[in-house]
Amino acid sequence: MTRRFVVLALVLAFGLMGSPWSPGSAAPPSAQDAAAQVNGKKITYQELNDEFLTRTRVPFDKVQDDPQAQQARKDLLQTLIDGELVLEQAERQKLTVTPQAIDEQVKGIRARFPSEEAFKQALNASGLTAERLKANIKKGMLRQQLLNKEVLEKVSVSPKEVETFYNEHKDIYVQEEAVHARHILIKVAPDASPENDQKAKERAQAVLTKAKKGEDFSKLAAQNSEDSSNKDSGGDLGYFGRGRMVKPFEDAAFALKAGQISDPVRSQFGYHIIKVDDRKEAKRLSFAEAKDQVEKDLTREKARVRYGEYVAGLREKAKITVNLK
Image: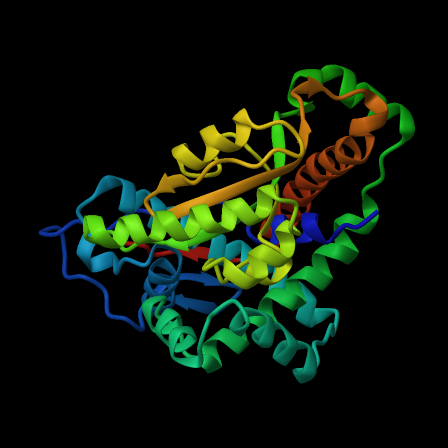
C-alpha cells in the first residue's frame, strides 16, 4: 500500500505557538531578529514572514492588525519550529537528497504552468526565488525521508482494525451520485453581441447534428471543441459529482442517461454539447468496496498519532526559545 500520501500530509502537519507584536507596545523586530531559536538555530522574522507570504499570498504587514492573521502567524511559527526539529534529525541521521531528485521536483512544479513567465510570476507572488524553491524542496524531501523512517515504517494496521474502523465510520464511506461525461465547447466571449452568440449557437447545433447522426463524439470533440484542456482526449471530463461544474452544465449532465447527448447548453464559457458515458448512483459502500480507502484513512490516523508522539519527544530534548512579538 502506498504511504506517500501520509508523508505529504505529515510534512505539512506541524503544530503552533507564539505571541504577536502589537503596534504601540514596542519597536517591531528587524527582519534578521530571531522569532524563535531551535537548538541554537535561528528562525528569523524574515523567514517567518516570507513563509506567511508563500502560504497566504498576502504580506503580513498588510494584515498585521487582523487577529486571524496574528493567529495564523503564531501557528506558522510552530510549523517552522517543528519542521526545524525534524530536519535536524534528518541531518543527524545523514539522510541525503540528490540534485537530480530536486530538479525532478522542480520540473514537476514547472509543468503545472503554461509558460516559464507564468512560473516565475507565481514564484514572485509567493515571495520565492528559484534557489529558495530548491532549498525548500530539499528540506521537504529530507523531512519525508525522516518521517517515513521514524513514523510510517512504525505504523501498521491489522485486518481486524480496518474492519472495526469501517464499522465505526460507515456514514463517511459513501459513493456520491456521479456521471462520466464528455463535452464539446464552442466558446462565446462574455461581452459577445447577440449576433456572435447566435453564430456560436449555430456552430454548436451543427456539431450536435453530426453527433446525433452517429459520428464519433470523441473525434468531433478533437476537431471542434475549444476547450484546450481536454479536446485531445475526446472532451473526456471523467467522473464528477454534483457541485463540481457550473450549474447549467451540471443540471444538463445529471439529467441525461448513459449514452444520451444534450442539446447545446449555455454557460458562462459558451455552448456545451454534453454526452454522458456512464452514471453512478449514490450509495453506501460495502466494506469490500471501501476497504482500500479505510486502510489508508486508518493508517493516516495512526500515523498522525505517532507523529505527534515523535515530535513531542524531539521537543522534550530540544532547547526552544520563542521570541515572537
